[in-house]
Every structure is written in structure tokens, then in C-alpha cells.
Length: 133
Picture (cartoon, rainbow, N blue to C red):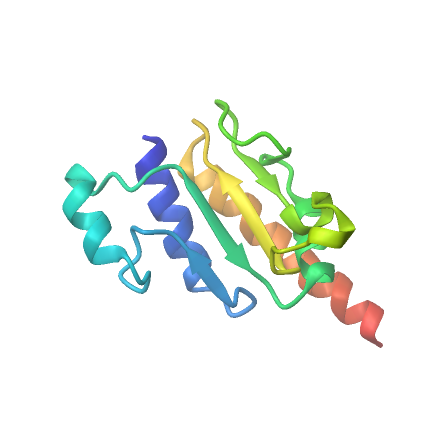
């Protein structure tokens, strides 16, 4: 269930204009999709993905607006988690893109996760746009 949900979430995110890039080997656009398809049986590409937004403002706004998805730095529980990696890296060693969010998909219903992300992306877009005016 986790892998199927992750693929559904990755597909949803890849269709959103506000999302610049989705990193998930189950997507044909991933540079290692062919390799992943050979070594991961039955299309089970794992439960961790990441996606990039324009900048840290968007990423933090999305992470702050989710309600079903929980914020956390330890990925890999039964609940879906999101992490803004750049904000927890030491200032002198930030290597993650500022707009990157990592997700670990849990056992919630896929539609609940997608709806949560849909609302959070909308909220983030509204917040960032209002701060730019």
C-alpha cells in the first residue's frame, strides 16, 4: 500500500504547476527509472520521495500547512511525514536545495494525502503571493 500511495502522490505532485521537480524512481521522468523498474519488482518503488518548490518560503509554507501529513525529521513511520531538509542542516554545510521537501509515505489513504497536499500547495501559493505584494 505504501509504495502504491507514494506513486500516486508522486504523480499528483508532478502535475502541479507550483512543483518544479519530483524525485521518485517510479516516475518515467526520473533519470534512473529504467534501472528501478528492473530491480524493484511489481512497480514497488518505495515509500520515500522528494519534491522541489521555487524556494524555502514555498517549502516552509507547504510544510506548515499540511494537516494529515506530519512534520518530522525521522522519516519512516506508519504516518506520512514531511521534512524541509535544508532548515535542519548545519548552516556551514547546507547541501539540500532550499525549496526541497522530503516525504516518507505512511499508511493513510492515498486520497487523504493528495487532498492534504493540494490544500497545502494552494495555501503556500496564497501566502507567498500575499507577502510579495
